Length: 320
Image (cartoon, rainbow, N blue to C red; front, top):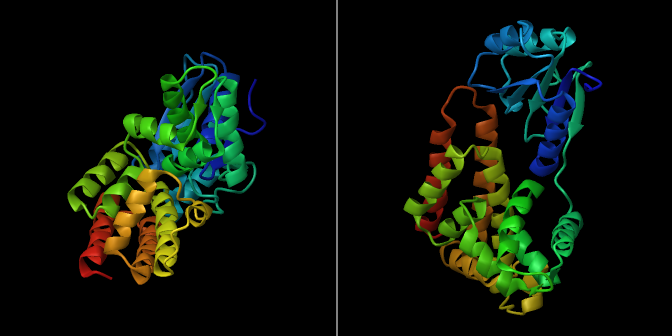
């Protein structure tokens, strides 16, 4: 079995559903399929196309996956890939992957089939988490659900990973509330955008830089980091707004998505270094560097990310 088109575009930020679709594609190509993975910007497009044009002596089907496809921006590379996609090699499937909802229009033309994996709505994420624990015979309270969504990155791949770890600490029939969820997620969690935010909130530049570099070394895309921090900075702005109005009601904090005690501590700490204008500055800074990263073809991304983090902490030092 092979896909309807030999050229597929798997786009969008929802990593879990995207990975499931990719696994189904690999399965459909059969156990003898040969898989090759490239990253746009690391391997010349000409080398990729040559590899796709050259047949295999051993594999019935071949799958070529090119990640970070949003980095294809040069006209010669785009034209080369578009020419291949207009006349793809026999028994060869090409999948272009990006966290963006769209890439160059040159690559989105037929016969390419585009599929966008959009971020799940808050309601769907809540249902996903609740159903996960129900299937394990455990009862997760509504606040427990919100705590998990607050502490885990915003895609089902991360939710699947962290929830699978969390259930190891409970047995069938257990009720899991926000305190239990936070305790064991904090115990098992790896570096994430949220651990990075915790260190930013503490104004700890050295540990923030360490977190950032671990994330980048693990293959986390800058756009994923920006999206997560932007979400946190917007909540920080809302938190500071409540604080400025002397509002301390728990329900008001819940309405802006701050449930877990650790989250309350993080946002309280961050509000000591940033006021409302400072939170606005963080949001603008994130948008600025997101744009810089997207437009940069050759300048090392890790340097731009280090610069971005330095400016975040400079805002705190300035007491904005």
